[in-house]
Length: 253
Image 1: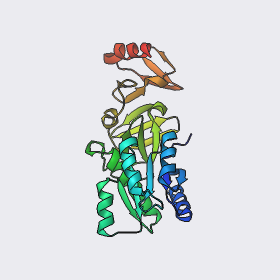
Image 2: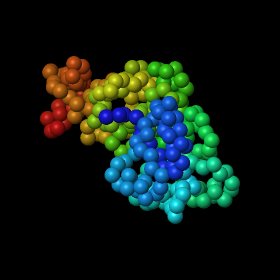
Image 3: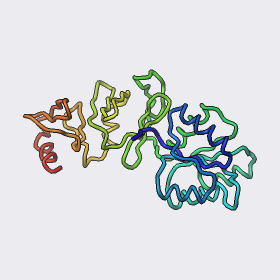
Image 4: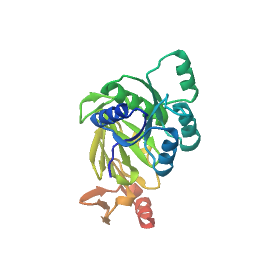
């Protein structure tokens, strides 16, 4: 299963749609589907759920991208980006009324696509409490937003894109000074953000602070020995002060 952020493209010019799909792949996102009208888009959304949509405002036919936007807001509550070759005030005003998460003017390049998706995700899922101006240690780059929370998962920055990590795939988080290392089934991610920032966004039902430097996903614990929890081959210490609480929780899962 891919952990890339998934995109549905709603565009009635197939060459443009395929060009967008290629650009999405280049910047680290996944095209889940391409449809060319509102009715097909609704059918697609009823069967699947992308993370974000790219919607042409001027779709051919009786229903436009504006009509689709209203339905997305009413029924699906997903972020969407408007695509348009028109930049006049009338079009912008109509678009503004249906509250797109971002706006992308044709023609566009890879960087503009990447920035529009990042802006849309942050506008829809983000708030000030999720911001960080710290660089990502792995890539040495200055990023404003290194993670976003959405139902059932986190969007974690990896390079210039966000990837989608389901809560169930997170094994444990580990503090290393002012950095946090997130260990997942897909690999690990390192961010210069304190552990507490991540702790605030994780569901307390499954994620427990067992030690000053460790948060463990109890659903991925494979065993225990003495004051240690085992997650695969990793031994994670449990503080004496919270040992009874931790093992009580562990016995209930």
